[in-house]
Structure formats: C-alpha cells, structure tokens
Amino acid sequence: MNYCIVAFAIIIIISTVQWFVDGRRNFTGPRTDLGLEVLEVVQSEQQDDLHGVTDGKKYDEEPRV
Image (cartoon, rainbow, N blue to C red):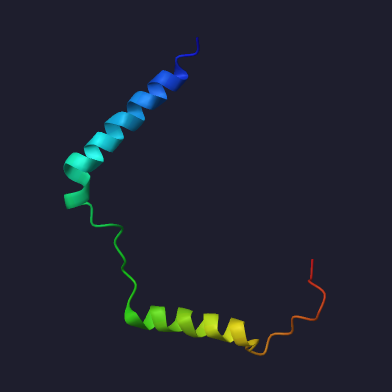
C-alpha cells in the first residue's frame, strides 16, 4: 500500500481542524499596499479595454522580432 495518501489525509485533517480552532478568527487575508490612485488607473485601463479604446498604439502591425 502506498502511504502517501495517508500522509496527505493527515495533513488535510490537521489543517482543517486548525482552521476551525484558530484560523477563522485570526486570518485577515493578504495585505494590500495599493493606493487609491493605482486602483483608479487599473480600473480605467480595464474600462478602456472593454470599450476598445487604445492609447495610440497600433495593434494591427506585425510584431517585431
């Protein structure tokens, strides 16, 4: 018998128990150091992409190698 699945199951069980005991209260998620300005730029670029607005770039040309 391959004991890899047993070891994996033990890790999953311990991780699940640890999450319910301590993780739900203390986990705050990843930090975000992005300022409001950066988020506004990203959102405006996404809106431009949705509406087909380009910033002067020619996308019809062949790529240079």
